[in-house]
Length: 450
Picture 1 (cartoon, rainbow, N blue to C red):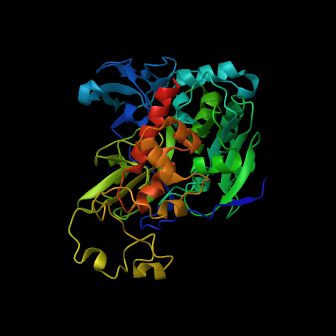
Picture 2: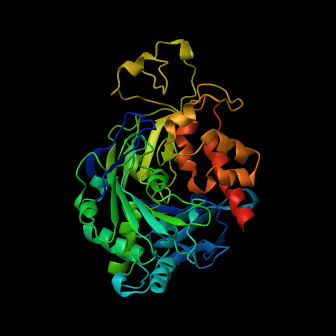
Picture 3: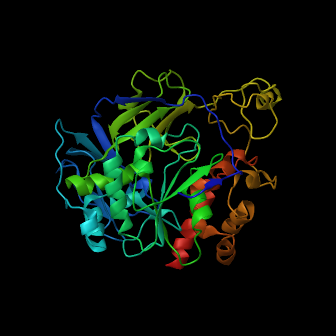
């Protein structure tokens, strides 16, 4: 195990509503959804119509650009509704769940005995391939490519982020099998990053076929982009794949049992939750199975994911494919007396603007209010204080805005994803939607490189 890597730049946002370390079996969801909008750059093509009966693992739709990449049902039942948006773009495929879960069958085998092609085919057929993402571009990995390495982040440093050591305490066997499968997909190493503050859970400590790295520091120390940058940076022409720990477990279950088992653990968090806890659910569940009688009344914002990078959903919306948490905070669309002129004992700030900075361990209730109007990007030096990569964030953003491909390459566009700029967006005095700009830049690079 390597020495501890200390990240100094960043910002911890200490919010109220962290999940208590208790497992609760959630009430079964009546409906489940798979959402094409969870997958950047995807153009889906349907394989089902409303009324079709499906099993867990049945293909619902596939990628129009690569028909091998399939997206399968997490639960058996009947296709209740296919929701479309503008220009008939598919938004959600909703499944009405049956009483007893039935599974499609896939290859059941020790991945160590299979070749790379057989492992990829099993992942593609089962619908688990989309759980593997690639850098650059932060999109679903191309099965024709061979990455120089694969990264798994066992740290979630985001505000109200999950504790992976708690989530993974009963998944040692499945995690190991998943790692064995991933190891066959790269000629390089499988890198596992863990929190260096305390001893790791057995699933992380005893895992083989990985190179383990310890990290400490403020958020975004848990972002896989930060870890890649400090372990094995991406240069032009190189590819790295990333997988979230719970998806590694699902991959392990696929090879152990021959089926797509979409069970996972999610945290219900936020200041507006009465009892923030961890729930055992099936991926794509309706969040009402978690929030019923457990959320304060009022105008709330429901987020699939964390407050920095998650997507806003309806109170009866569905858990995102890559998300391990649901966060509920106040909407914050009411007027505050005195605004920023108040002393600010209960206001969080990244600068010493409020007296709350004198209480370092204080937990805050933060709403979605912008606390100001949008304006032109201003050079304040705040981005550089929270951005722990050897990249100039402001200059890269400007290069993206003017669509200067050569300059974007020189400034490190291949290394970053939207989430790497989430803190920049949070501290930005200009209230700019920085993550959307970065996504636009990545999409532009995909178009130009193809």
